[in-house]
Length: 160
Image (tube, rainbow, N blue to C red; front, side, top):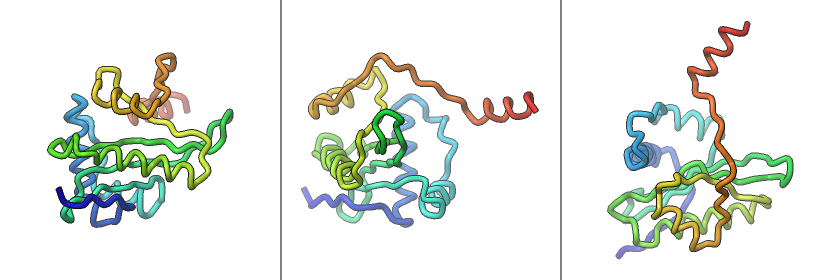
C-alpha cells in the first residue's frame, strides 16, 4: 500500500470531506439528514474557524477525515470534541482510522486539552470495538439532548 499522510485540511479537501460526510450519514442510516453543504463547510471552517479537521491522504486522494473543535467543560476545562471521524469504506481496516485517531490524541495533548469527547451509536459495534482498543471510557449513563433548527425557530417565534 502507498504511504498515508495525515495533515490539516485545506479548502481543496472540502469536496472530498463533504462526500465522506454523506457516506457516513448513509452508513448511520441517516442519509437524508445532511443539511450542510460544501459552501457551508468552507464558511464555517475556513472563514469563521468553527472547526478544525485532519485528513488522511492516500495517492493524493482524501480517504478519511476527523473533524473536531474545542469546547469547555465546567468540571474539566478545555475539551477537544471529535464531531465526526470516518474512513472511506474501501479503506477501512488499513490502519487509517488509527492514524487519524492517534493524531487527534496528539492534538489534544498539544493544545493542553483536559478531555477528549465523542459519541458513537450504540449499534455501531465496529466503532465501539475500535474505541475499546484505546481503553476509551464509553459512558452509557448520559442521554443526548438536542434542538434542531426547526425547534429553535419555533421557540423563538412562539415565545417573543
